[in-house]
Length: 120
Image (cartoon, rainbow, N blue to C red; front, side, top):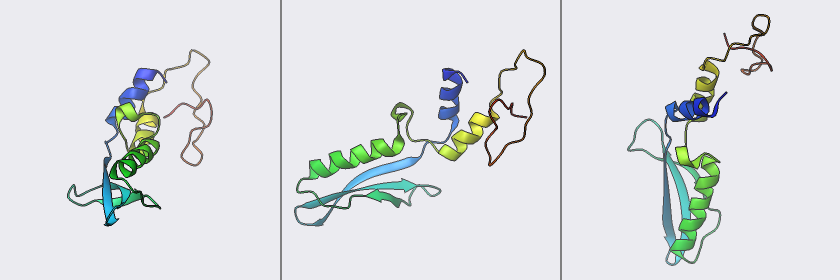
């Protein structure tokens, strides 16, 4: 699969609505929390939070941002995308036809194509 096909598939997958916030559970104690809104944009659920508190707001914020980057993964430039939808899009993308003798239409196993299989 070409790089541009992969990028197009990534951009077609819906962007996840993530938010990073810093809370102050006690005066001078800060912790980060990553929230996600799924169906109702007004409702956020906690995805991840710090196990410890920090003495400075900026330290909690920077640490939370590091966790957000880890959560998004290596494709930060495209934003956090829904992985389930991305997988579906990648397998739905037309595969280049092989000039070899016919196509290999071996069945999928556990939702994944066998090596060398061509999507139907």
